[in-house]
Picture 1 (cartoon, rainbow, N blue to C red):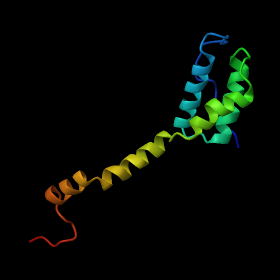
Picture 2 (picture 1 turned 120 degrees about the vertical axis):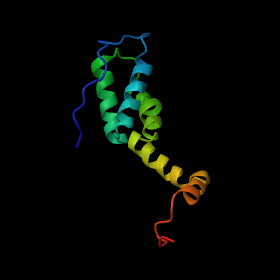
Picture 3 (picture 1 turned 135 degrees about the vertical axis):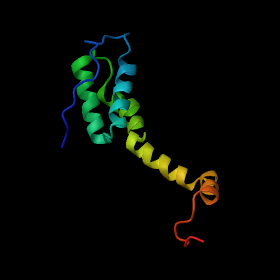
Length: 109
């Protein structure tokens, strides 16, 4: 199921030489950051391109050079989860916890 999303920038119609590629790449990154997966990302990027940009890139080009690379990025939620996992496994954090946080499994002495 495809969620309805609007094109997030109000910059009007983008002509050749006005940064079509960069704007579409930024749009794809913003969507991926929100957790949009590859299939939906492709649909939304292509729709936004056709609705807001002067033709010049083929759909295959946009998929190959924007959608596929961007879909490999982590979403913001995935970054947070991965960051927490790395933080908790950090030797420095483990040393700090051993030194300054009482072991809740030991009875008070």
